[in-house]
Image 1 (tube, each protein chain N blue to C red):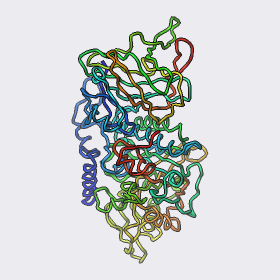
Image 2: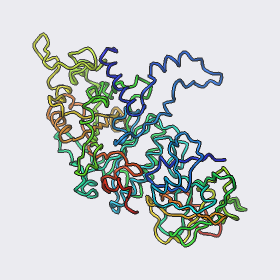
Image 3: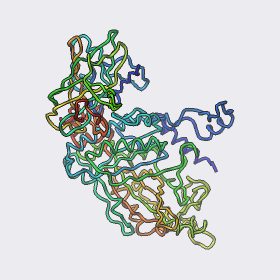
Length: 426
Length: 185
């Protein structure tokens, strides 16, 4: 199962992680298990910690990018969407982002936030990252045209069944962490400090496999059981930067190092999926369930052969399958996926749950990279019989906070405010 | 003795001001703010002579309030070899600023009252001003104290030297203890 390409890719991922400051580099899950099994339990009965504690790992901010985009996905997600209160103007948003940026910077290093009422809950950062974004209305109304990133709402898609409950918001924070308690604390701290200026519209919780359960770099599985996210640019690949990071979008270069975030809340109709056998499930996606390999290949990262036919002359990979429809001959129609599974209790459904995917995609230009792919899937994708998008939003993700400044300062106050160190008086 | 945490490098977004900040034993503290650094970054702090040069204030913050009274907190550290005493505090945002301690009343309830003799920061040690404990009380606010802004406080030491602090204003639900002579803040 661990063929050459798979491990080559993992090495690439490790190298990438090291280049971004060491988070995620180093010990592997398998090494941990081996060491742990060889170590006798101490007399007090506690489980010995082998290797560096996952709770102590931090993700530093490197260069011009906010963390949480090229960061190997952490185990847990809290995506918080805020609507600005009626009285919150540009000055109010500046104040809010100052407070929230400071909270994020402290908590990411395992330091309590200022006026933190539960400082002990900040002690184990567990790769905590907070990534902020601004919705189209904020850009239109609070960012001058001269430095406004080119972001528009997504076009309507015919198969979407959007619930306003999960709709567009003014501000978003993608909070990710390997530990759910640390995550909950960070979320609470940020919401507390934002509430003067904004009200929470939604919080989308998500999860992946727990840290250490599978080797770092393993492609996630979604709740339909599929290996999900195989075709995804890795930070160490040369294509990654142009696909993900915006250049000087906005005119004055104040958005350089930023990106755009597409949020799609995709509900899975698992009750219906339960009726589909394994062969049917593999045809729908075009990949094997066990390895994630394309139906024409052996290993996960084998290139699918869409021209291959079976002994009856039919394509091995159904042209209406998910991977066939998602694939583009245009290498520009790719983006970074960073999705999380979600499950909410829902007694109204026979399964007792509302489950799916918080689909998060980062792209330098969503209209160019994401929209064409989503249009094809909207027109035809066998998977559509079992999934439906119920929430949709887009955000401009500013570059990292400038030294001494806050996230969004380049947009809200201009790049001059960064170079001179003169934030507007409050 | 409380450990002196100097997190200026991590919290630059809020421009906390320091008069001095040395002697940190925290590994995260890669770039302790010094008088010079802080002055360059913010242009605001000023330190008088003598004792104030040994005083550093970490994580100063003020509870937001629309009017009336509020309180300021933070950690005062003394890097010198002599004890320091903060004898008074001042801000233009309030008509008066007092040094308060929190004490237990005869009925067991907690109340705050002016601290006799000021805040003493022992040589090489620190004093934490926090909700439920010692704090600076700002009375007669001249304008709303709004979250995300900063408020300038001047601390005067026993030798007459002064230290200026830029404190971050935060919304905070706690710190509503009773003032001993009646009102809340």
